Length: 308
Image (cartoon, rainbow, N blue to C red; front, side, top):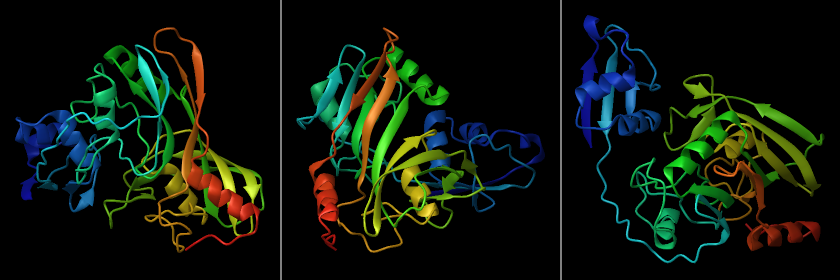
């Protein structure tokens, strides 16, 4: 990894951080620079910052440039579980263990590899590594996501994420029992300064994050909740559930308890509602619980202990 450092001088004061870095590295796209900042590869006075931060006199900017990775984007037949498809979009029910798109540290097969085999026409707005990807879900989270097959659809669907006309609902099995039937977690989320692979609830360099939850079924020591995302932050449900001391069962990253399953978090995106980018028709899609989650719930209903 290559490390670069700059000290802000008077004539640079007030420049946006991403613009400043673009001036220092004109051969790199602004999108890539912004991703480096978001990923925590750029520090201001040894602290994580934001793209729109305006540099101040004598600020020390440190950039640890990640090693470039060559990605093999050869299409792969993944036998995708296609819920719906037309000339504008495709809705996929993603299985557990599949990363949505290539990224830093990811050399395995991703959903993008399967999409490139299945579709020859994907939006190019997010570049070659994330063709058609409007939003994503974590590797070990199962369920629905929509992919854009052209730039028009991508723009329209992305706007719906911003104005919240696209809705996403999840089922999560969490540790502990609730005295109440529903609630809302309104707590900003940002990157954990001690561990850049994790997110956390923080007032520092964070963004608004709101999750509503509803108790669906109670068990001894566990609860099945339905979560509605009002915002779409990285790891949002997992971080928020940890924040209220009810971490998602099986979460290797955020659970402070011994996982009741070693196969990753029991979190499933079961419903997706959107407005079709061309017809303006409201569409709602659903995906059944994966077999693993059904099996765990059935064991709990029968009073069986979860396997460690």
